[in-house]
Length: 293
Image (cartoon, rainbow, N blue to C red; front, side, top):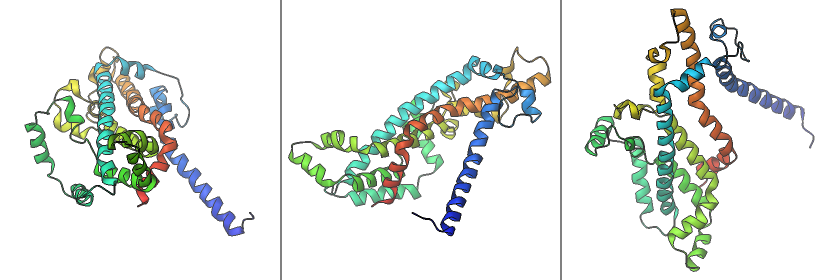
């Protein structure tokens, strides 16, 4: 198809803007990665722009020798895996019946769910409730209180309604399938795009969570990685990391500079690795589940 002059200008403008935005998004990631492998002196001097200079992995070695960071990484991995599994089960079990036309009272229940998006008890009543449940300073306080997100229930319910014909479920009922069999054998296999979106949403939320741990956890053995990083990067508690390695203030400053970038890479790498595996489902599941119905 022959494009008019205005169409060519429009296409060129779109490509140009997309390229510029892509570079603006990618450059900070590339810079942090390069700085983490560079000599801290080069980073402080502003010599590192794109590629590493003075290849150095001392900061990474120091990170993986630190007990708190390793423990925080393992804790965050546990919270993310178990928390995402609980989130996914709860979301599916709530969204599936709410998507069924033959489920009485579904609109009322959905209205109650939506009400909780706009109104909640607040931080203090929530804390008191969790304290009364005996979950303070426990593993479960990081995965149970936020076991489900109403917005994600809405997305998944809409996906079920708009993508999977109800006649297909009726046919399965005629063949003798129970509700759980329909869910397991029909609904879930046909809903991989939206399930992948939910996995990504919930996993990123758990991985980046620190405020909940800041409120409910006192035992450092249960601290997630983000809370450990907060102490290191914001409160500048790097004494343990530098014991026996830095003899002068200048050396300490160099080590701290290298640690900042290296810790950022370690903290964000798992989510960056996860995304490419879910990317092919991401836009399809999100768009279909959000705008139809």
